[in-house]
Structures are given as C-alpha cells and as structure tokens.
Image 1 (cartoon, rainbow, N blue to C red):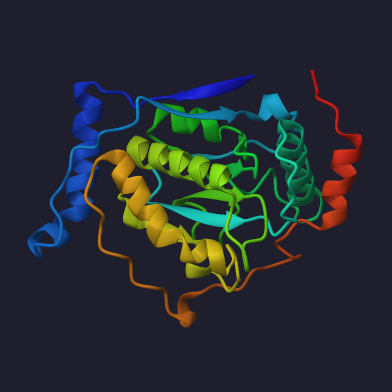
Image 2: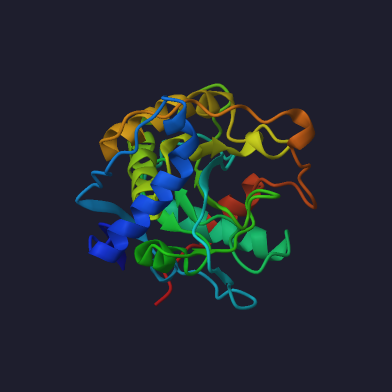
Length: 267
C-alpha cells in the first residue's frame, strides 16, 4: 500500500537536533556573512511513497544495514531508460522490479542500489528495503550501492529516463522537488547538498539536461522549505571522481521490457 510520508517530528528534542545539524553545517558560511541559519518550514506532508511491499520486491539476499548516522547529502541519478509516455503506476512498479533484479542478479548486490526512484509518471517507489522506514523515523539511513564513495553518506534518488538531450517531464520534476524537500527537512540537510552522480563518479549520470537543472532544483527545494538559497557547491575535480566498478551501471532495455511483459502484483 502507498504511504504518505509524515512531516518530520516537531517535538523539542527533534527541533534541537535539527537546529544543531543546521547550525553546525552552516557555521563557516555564517561567519563569512554568506548565509544565516533558517528555521525550516517543512511541508505539511511528504510525497506519497510506494514501499517495497507495494511493488512486489524480492527480499534482500542478506540483511540490510542501517547506519547510525544520518546522511550528509542527496545524489540525483537517471536510469538511462527510454523516455516513454507511459506514465502509469504499473510501469513504475515494473521499473522498480527490473532495477532490483538487475542490481541483485547482475551487479551482485544484496538489494536495489538506490534509496528511491521517481518514475516519469511521478510515482515515487522505495528502492532498498528499509529506506522508507528510516526516512520516516528521520535519524538514520540505510547503507546503499548507488555511488562509489558515497554509499554511507548520501541518499540516492533515481529518475526514470535519459536526460542527456531533454529535460524530465514537469510532473516528474515536481515529484523530485517534493521528495528532496522532504529528505532535506527530515535530516536537516541544506539544499546545497543536492548533488549529481557525476560529481563523485566517472559517469555521465544524471545526464547533461538533468544535471543542468540541479541549481534550479536546489533553489526550488530551498523555496519549498522557506529558506534562502545556499551558495552553489564547488564542482568536484576529475581526480576525485571514482570509476564505476563491475558491470554497466544502467539497466539494459530488454530487462525492463521483460518485466513489463510479465508483471503481476505480488500479494
């Protein structure tokens, strides 16, 4: 069943923790006169997220590890699949299944690599098991497998499609803004920490056009949270980008076509 993400807890302890993270991370900017720490105006509700049970996920091959520390950033990806006009929930669920199968059976991972996926039809699905649970709780994150060198510190969000020469559909982009705003509000992350996969790995992901949208995404998330935009992050130098290990990172077209042809919801 889909679940609407609740707004972050608003008790005194939660508020103090969030403000400590915001104030600590922003100290250098405040001292330089570039930024003043805000009080987040979190959305009343988060986006609707379909958990692993809703789309019929396989169980992970071994227990998923929950890390004690919260994430430091969000990393945006694209799936490099076709830019179809099938915006249905069925396709979103089939995509989630196909990605999990590829990650487990070909990449050899224990489960889906990323935490969440946003379909072209704006359906948000949970990727790795427990990602939704930990986001709801707001204190910890799940160890992932979406970006070399960042899997202990970053929430990974895949976006269905290939965004090298065209931008995501408006509805998909809006769902991405909503999800990023909720993740930032929950964990006390500054919007400046919404980054692209290519910032850290030697890859074209998330495509030229989606990557070019990241400054706007950061601004739109800041506006959604009721804070001033942060200074833009410095780009990573090529020497700091890790090569992608193992099989190709992207799902082959035939894998998704096979899942679409045989997709039936699990009960």
